Length: 444
Ligand code: NDP
Image (cartoon, rainbow, N blue to C red; front, side, top):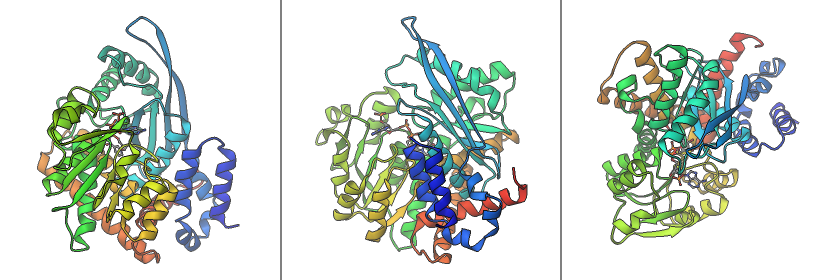
């Protein structure tokens, strides 16, 4: 049994009941063989065993009072996974499905994603099984304040800088920041995704979605292709999905379908993003309302059917494991040419295999959605330098970062004999930098 196989087997044995964590670790470790073979010294210092073990896992209770006066209790998490190349950085997710396995898979992915940006940020992730859906503003605030009343002692502008993720947007970041500032009496860049009036960066809201389109555009350019005239489907209708849609449309693509967790809308004449924004960003409503407003569109219960819609480009931007092997096969059968992951781990291992065997362009999450965290790092740079860059400046930096990521993963895939395999390319490039830093730090 190889070193990598042993590490993976022990990980599964030592972390039972964590299927998402196993899945992410399998996807990563099975592509690192060429690097590990080149560096036998890694095994002697148990580098991989340390790489897959979080530096610190914080779990805590989050008590809060709902509008009826009932005391409610949720679970809170922060996994500080790896700080070899910089302070822990990664979002907070508020969703009822959150558990340790999900936070650990996200944290492990985040280490390599952050490394790929070329910026000095380590990997972390956190969140809660709190469900923001249907809660009043006061309940959201009460929850966020209680969450931060524990989290504040573990984070800091040079230690660990959380951001948003599913269920955590501008409103939640505002309440979390307000509580941090109150407790610590410090106005520092301890969270990213902050509002523009209190230290946020332009483009952060758009960054993940825009970045996803920039990297896909670069992959297209390398093939003499472009977004112009392409038919696109996008899962989700949250932060990442909305801004991916906006940028794709601005480049001449026609987005024909989007979804939320209840069902999808199909609009053959092209999704009207103003309507989606009104429903999802302003009213916090359901996407089903789109069909009532836009003539010629159709709402369908359930999400899976969306992957059967013929398209050139598929952008999964909702959640993990939303595309299984069967859905991947349908996409390929109906002519998809590019799949770029806006969400984290949206494709199952079976789906990835289908995409790779079919020869389509598959851009994995840790490269394709790195624009969000990259712009968070730009927000950190502006905070510590007391600077405020223009929209154009930040957007240009974001685009340059995404273009670089594409070429770095493309080059690495070629160098290691896996041409066109961007999963391997991304894992290898991300890992090499982290491994070098870990070697330099000794056994810590
Ligand atoms: P949001 O909360 O803004 O939006 C999430 C969207 O996905 C909503 O439309 C939601 O529907 C849908 N969704 C959530 N769970 C499911 C499910 N089980 N089935 C179907 N649809 C679902 O989150 P973000 O847009 O911020 O995040 C989306 C993805 O992108 C996540 O995987 C996240 O980790 C990843 N990501 C986000 C970054 C960021 O900067 N925000 C950065 C990098 C990655 P509903 O409204 O019904 O809940």
